[in-house]
Image (cartoon, rainbow, N blue to C red; front, side, top):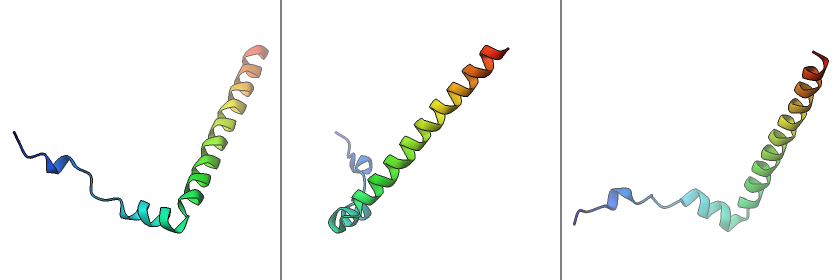
Amino acid sequence: MTHLSFLQAPPAEMADLFRAEGKIYVVLAVLGIVFVGLVAYLVWMERRIKKLEKKA
């Protein structure tokens, strides 16, 4: 059996610090806002493209 310690991830100290201080919720909120913004932009672009396709 081989030694597989190199496959284990190092401890996530920054994540633990954010979780301990409650900042993880701020990070998750920002990521959520960015994700919702991207989805809204893609939906808006899709509608514009469909509108242009109907014109042509």
